[in-house]
Amino acid sequence: DTAVSQTPKYLVTQMGNDKSIKCEQNLGHDTMYWYKQDSKKFLKIMFSYNNKELIINETVPNRFSPKSPDKAHLNLHINSLELGDSAVYFCASSRFLVREGGETQYFGPGTRLLVL
Amino acid sequence: AQTVTQSQPEMSVQEAETVTLSCTYDTSESNYYLFWYKQPPSRQMILVIRQEAYKQQNATENRFSVNFQKAAKSFSLKISDSQLGDTAMYFCAFMKQDTGTASKLTFGTGTRLQVTL
Image 1 (cartoon, chains in turn cyan, blue):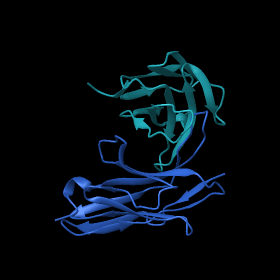
Image 2 (cartoon, each protein chain N blue to C red):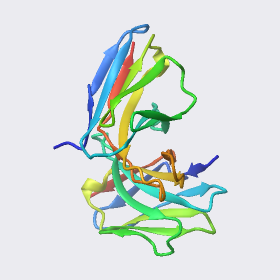
Image 3 (tube, chains in turn purple, red):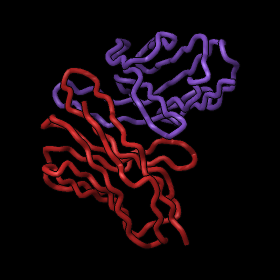
Image 4 (cartoon, one colour):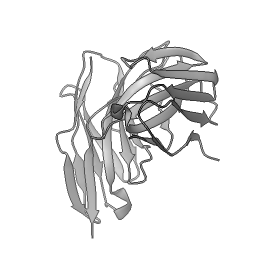
């Protein structure tokens, strides 16, 4: 009964390839996020979706394309992988309360991507 | 833009002792939320504690408590009776109150805590 799950956990691939990471949450949350953790452990938001609609899109290369088929799933597709894309990618989810905001985000286990 | 600073890259504490991790932040917002997340070697990001800026009372969760000083923009985490399982990277994070839209977490650079026997 994992709350936020990601597949795969590890991904090793060659430069130039295209890969996808999948995320699913069973918490009934409306909002999902992608964060990137670099080699120095720094975490930064990439995208956020609310009810399948893109809300946050930080300055991320357009080789990264998130897709949300429904509010329980948020996938991340990466085209033409580069060495600098090597990182841990975390999916997270939260409720969405219009009046209050500030909902706690719950994270998945992360996907470690290594580009060779 | 908000920034979060964790000035202690690494800390060590003996089992059963108390340790305090520092966090300061910079913002012009008046309504916001602060969080501490823990990342053990398993890599999972685990929520430790959360504080609403409009609440004067410091948040507490079992052995974990915060010292929230809004005027000083300081949000330290105190871990009492440290346990080996507390060994992890600890991240302080800021979220502004964005009603009507999703809010992002802005993280500090983390403090690596080692609990020793």
